[in-house]
Image 1: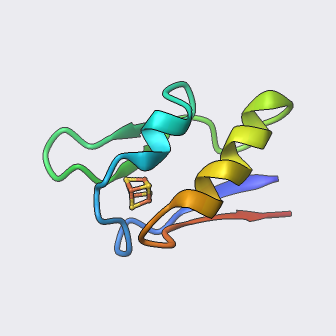
Image 2: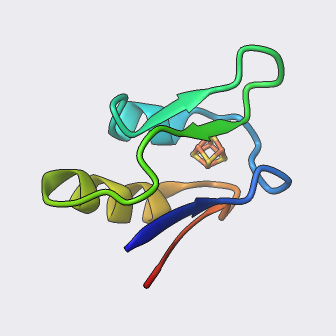
Image 3: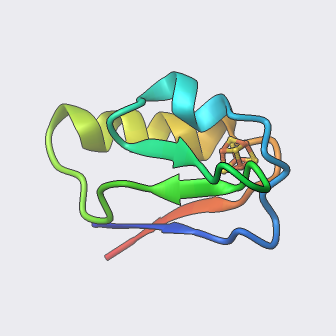
Length: 64
Ligand code: SF4
């Protein structure tokens, strides 16, 4: 599964980073999401699903 972030929708709330700081970071300048692992597996994939569900900007998605 590929983890995709649409930074144009990201509101920089940082909810994703709280879900898994090994999977997400935030840009130092504008706070938008940085994906650290674009093909998460195992427990990290579970965290990715949770982050997609919780993201207030609907900026995150998972695709085959
Ligand atoms: S939770 Fe969503 S809106 Fe918030 S920083 Fe992460 S990707 Fe952006």
